[in-house]
Image 1: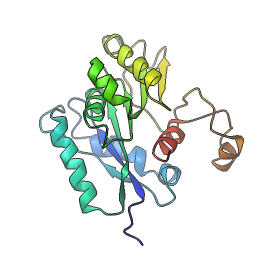
Image 2: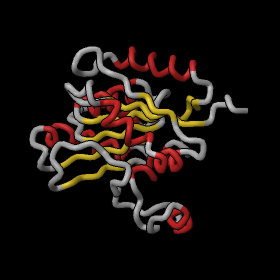
Image 3: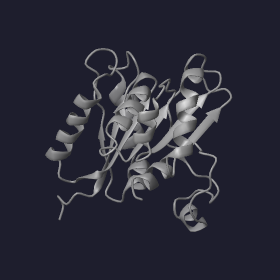
Amino acid sequence: DELAPSIPLIVCFHGNGGKATAKDRFGRLFTDPGVQRRLDPRGAAVLVPQSRVEYFSDPAGYARLVENVILRHPAIDPRRVAAYGFSQGAAFAHEIAMAEPALFRAAATGSSYYRASLAELARGTRVRFYCALAKNDKGIYEQGVGTARALAFICPDSRYVEYEKRGHFFIEPEDKTGRALRGAERGAEHGVPHNAERFVDWLADALTR
């Protein structure tokens, strides 16, 4: 059945002031044919909302938006939704994933400065997180590193990737996690060494398991 819920949904949150370029800047990451095939043989849906002002707020409101999109598109599997964010959008991805852990199976954040409460961290244990920060991203790193490390420690199948010098950045599909892929045969299947898990590999697995 073509309408059977099967494909994942990636929801991308832009950074502060990034509304104008969000679709091309982040949408392209997940509409790339190779990334689409890696996420699911039938591809993946991509949603790039724009903030009401220059930054995101109101997690409950955006959660309802995502739920309405799922209702309107029956091919999307509501159990396979991921949040992806950069900068302020990454902080919001942290916030919304921990506020709505039943909606988001995974969340990926690049350059997030979010500081989660203990209650948020407890709710977040239901979500798989990929958090990436650079030490030379002054002000951002210092604020966000505690939450990023805590989530990677307490949330199953999660990752924290730290760079010495990458500045203020967003996660790319080919970014390496420092982990090995699950099985040499999987690495061979996707044309990469078995010891080189990429962000897109992690995301595909996080949305499947």
